View 1 (cartoon, rainbow, N blue to C red):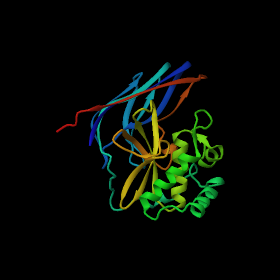
View 2: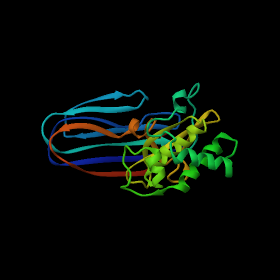
View 3: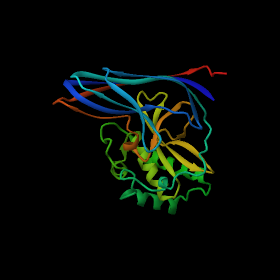
View 4: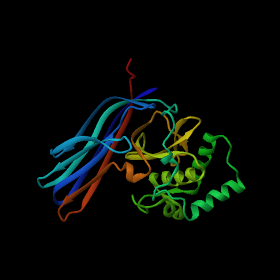
Length: 265
C-alpha cells in the first residue's frame, strides 16, 4: 500500500456574470477495498449553500447553489489516500445491472463486428481476468489518443468508428466489449498521476474480485490511481454538472498534482 497526496482544482471563468447557479460535484473519493481516504478537504468558491449527497451508485458528492452574480466558479479537493494495487472484493456479487450496456456503451456498429473478429481470428484467453486484459489491449491498439474530436455525450460506437478519442472513449468501448463478453464491469472516474486532469478507466469483475484496467494506458491500475466515482458510463460519473442563468460562455482550467506521502501507522 502506498500513500498519495493529491490536489485537484477546476476553475470556470464566465464571459459575463452567471447567477442562480445550481451544481453537483462528484469529487469526494471514498474508502473502499482498494483505497482509504486518510484526509480530505474541499473548496467551492464563491460561497453559497452547500451540502453532501449520495447518488444511486453510492458515490458521494457536493450539491450547491449560488444565487448572486459571479464571474468565476472554483472547486476542488485536497487530501491523502492510502492506495493498494491489489484487486478488491464486494459481497456477495456485483449487481446484474453491470452486465447491461447504457446508451453510451451499447456495442453497436463496428464494435460488435470487432468483437466477432477478435474471437474468430485471435481467440481471447479462457481465464476471465486475462480475457478482460485481452479486450483492453485490443481497444488500446485500435484507438489513437486525440483531444477535441469527441465530447462527453459521444457514444462508444462513434468513438470506435473515428478510431480516436480520449480516456472516456477508451473506457466506453472497453465496457461495450466486456458486456458483449458477459463480464460485469463499470466505469470509473478519478485521478491518476501524470494525467494533469481527471481520468477514466474500467473495473472488471473476475475471479470474485474487481480489477482496475486502464485501456488508455494499456495497464492494470496501481497505487497511482485514486477513484472519485463509479457508474455505468461518463454521465453517471461526471465530475461537475450544473445550470445557471446568464448569456455567458465559460472557459475552464484544470490543475492536478499527485505525489507520494508517508503511510500512516
